[in-house]
Length: 193
Image (cartoon, rainbow, N blue to C red; front, side, top):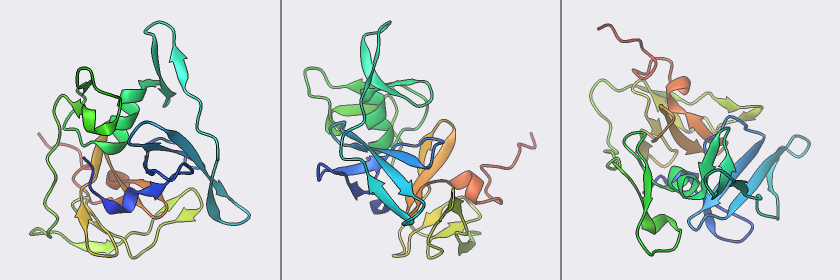
């Protein structure tokens, strides 16, 4: 499971939700542990996030008979839940325990990533996270390291979670692509081999 406290918000149904990584920042989609999906929109006039009261309608993929979302390609609902809530080590498939309800506790990636150390490491340097998601600035009390890790204002450290070959972590302004936010991160450096 993703344990990073910064990425938890209460959806309109009062359940905890995590943001689904996607390239559209103005209308974020948030997923509860049981697969309820709500949209949160940035109000440019009030400069605040506002929730849509109604859940996001799901798509039905006729060829497979699956229900899910387009992000931008089709993702089954079990993939949507697992992507928002579980740590994975590679692009493997997600599995639902047999005869169990569709919720995060019953889902597993084929290979899950172990929770990382949260301590500083040698050669790691920290600087304020000077980052915006659209026009929404992140709190500079968050810090980004030269190793692509994020430190919250309360001192917690994460290297984020994997999604489509990039590592993501939540801040007050939404999910941040840690490789892009840390230009000296090894994630962005080309291989010399």
